[in-house]
Image (cartoon, rainbow, N blue to C red):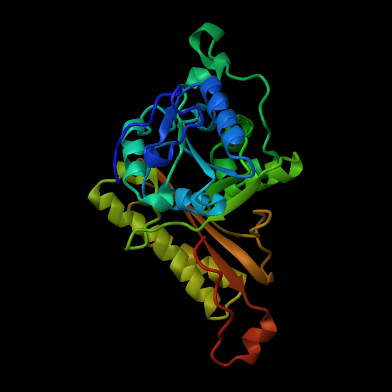
Length: 342
């Protein structure tokens, strides 16, 4: 692919030309984003827009999200990637200051990815652009009105990171209003986040379709994450305990075991892993993130969170808990295959 720079805003107010489709136009202000999307909508009646929200440090997992976004809107649609490290979702002592930031590298990765990952606009605002009240002149307080994530934000990740999902949903709502997409694509690795975003859209009657994309993994099973860059080689090996735990739980479910046995299998792997400080292991209802009752059957979501070295990692897998009658009737103990890694 070429890396020819995009024409200027004056030459290409819609942010896209047929001969420079592969070079995403980078915008840093809300005004420029509005001008570009307004012009594109006027020039492309009937076409759809998709957004992929990221905190940068893009990797193959993000490219899968962009690929899905492009597939959702087709070759004539518009794909917008947001590249913004959101301070509202980081708590005291977390890695906000050291979180990797390199917009130029992100844009280069997108440009080299292929036509099925074609991006039209990258919106990479400064913190003060999205949160004028967060700057020193405003006393650093941030926005007065924020989204509250409700009970979804108080369990699992929300319990470990108080206020995290309030910050996530606040920036998601802002970006949805700014980009005005028809479709927003999110990764299922952050399963609780995806559920919170779905509830935001449903509960506040937002006119956007939310699409989830399965987790992208390394060949050895490690879930792709921007935070993997923090891991030393030895820590990366230890981090594989998370995906091993999920496989153990999934295999146990596939053998026809009940929810308690599935959870115990995953916990057993993590309890025996050196250098892995477990935050939680949970088997929950994928629609509510409430713990599955011991006798529950049907779909479940197995979630793990742990710290390896100084890096906090999360992962999850979908499982299917077979009814007791099925387990009793099948001598092989086979249950329906799990729904796959989420």
